[in-house]
Length: 100
Image 1 (tube, rainbow, N blue to C red):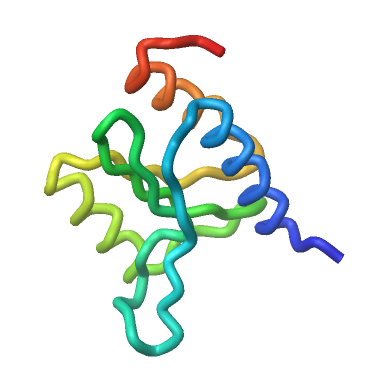
Image 2: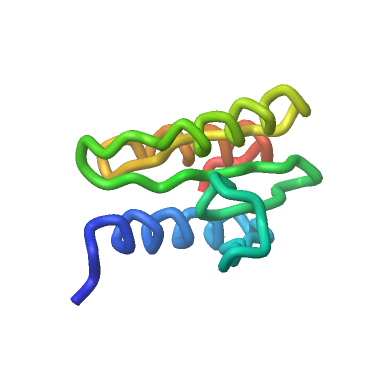
């Protein structure tokens, strides 16, 4: 059975594919940095970190730190949930100059 967060991730991936984005799910498993976004992608040379949350779930302090660090490095960082997928689509439209 799919979890609410996995449904958000699936919707995000669908949008990323729609805009021909390169993306992956970073696997930390004790060897990577804690708090890294759920999905890391690149669109037209721009780095995007996406933290997926379902319902009212909030990012952890480590996740917020990583998203802030992405923004400080002039990347794009967003918390996406089922209720704000339009935010990601708007970002993708701005980066690609296209509406699909």
